Image (cartoon, rainbow over all chains, first blue to last red; front, side, top):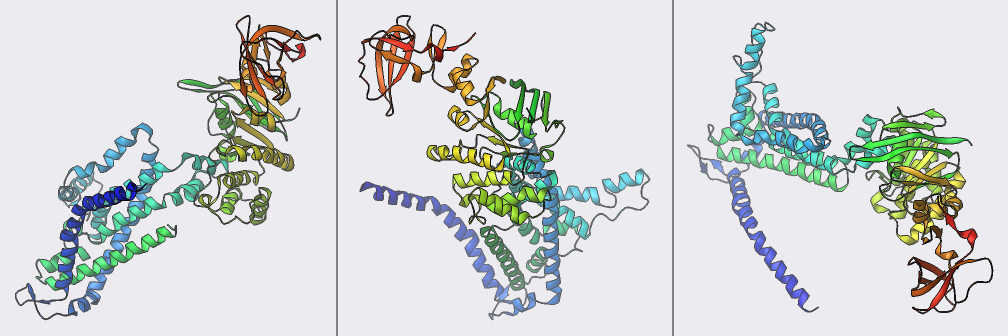
Length: 286
Length: 319
């Protein structure tokens, strides 16, 4: 009996050691850079770019400029639309896979197959498909269905398409994981109590897959909100989202402090949303 | 006999198994009927065929005289109490009970839910979630959820299996009493012969996808029609082709004077069971017999020469 506490504290010490690499990693690659970004956001832009004194809150005042607020709002709606479409496409897909019996693993592999190539390459593939002289327009013109090429690339629709394409697996996988764990007896019970298939889906399966939908929503919404590669390539610079704005400040505009302030703002919004989600999860809401 | 539920040549063959291999059964209205059998005998598949979760390979299911083979589970007026209860974890007790009423657009939902929960003595726990209820309480919710729909037949799939033994015995009486009060036909599936004997008005014993015998508990226990039924419903001493229950088997030191049948035997051991003593004896034929003797009777020692005796009217004879 007297040995037990000693061995317990031994495990405690060991656990501390196991966590050490993660702690160093988080400190060096998350906490420190974040502190640097905050510090940058409070400095003044140097005469030739770069950083200079004095300390100021001016950068944060500029974040609320109507021009930038509009970009922020547009990014928000774009991310929200991406999440909604990913849910509408991903939920039925996850439901289908969870009932595919022995083919489940094959279908799951197909869902993650795109990850085998670089996202950049895949976006260029979309450009090849969507541009005026691309595959889709060429085929439609040859079939005589259209005369002039359809404007498929370099607009909001193309960006939305690219975002949904890129983030769909992040919705499918967590939703699949919750559906897979559902007791099949619950669906039988619903049918037994008089629920036709759609009401059973709506009143039983959907509410019970809420944890997966919530996780998928967060996994899609957050990267979609900060996306810059997709809007850059498929939007052709016409659809400026907050990710592109931040990138511009650090590259062409050479205004690091303002870019940093925008980044902090974005993180604040994301952080607030995640906290809200966690609270809803604790309260058992969707 | 007015049958509320009838099975005609019902069969369900799975790729590797003939789960139900052609059974016919008439279940009278308003009674407590049990399907009793060992695991894998096809009793649960039969229940699932009646509920509509499986479609039969052959045969028909008739409810109130009409064939319901083509009806989906949500169209059949039967309801199931599942073995694990299958309560909806995201709904409260009251919402679980209201679920079917809402799907079927029944009127006066609040009143019906309240009455159903009172019937199963769960008043006051309406707003608890299944995770906040005990095993027995969850079962009551499952019962209320089905009973509130006033089904033609209530199907119970091993409803007591998940409860602890003490609660199980208490629930037997409660279920039986509840069935009498609501007057709905109960069809219970169980592998526990005590359960089936104590609750049923009638029962069917199943084995290997077939029905071995249908009758009252008294019939099937005292006059089993096959050796399987005799052995499944209780212990049997097999002596020269006839079967004897241990409680009607006696050991005597001298030959009985009355018309009792007897065989010479040697005591091989005894087991104290609290309410009685089981004495084991080996007959000269080499057959083993167990006799349940009163605890305060005379003690038998191993090696002692005795007579195994019984009343011929207690014999179970099979063709």
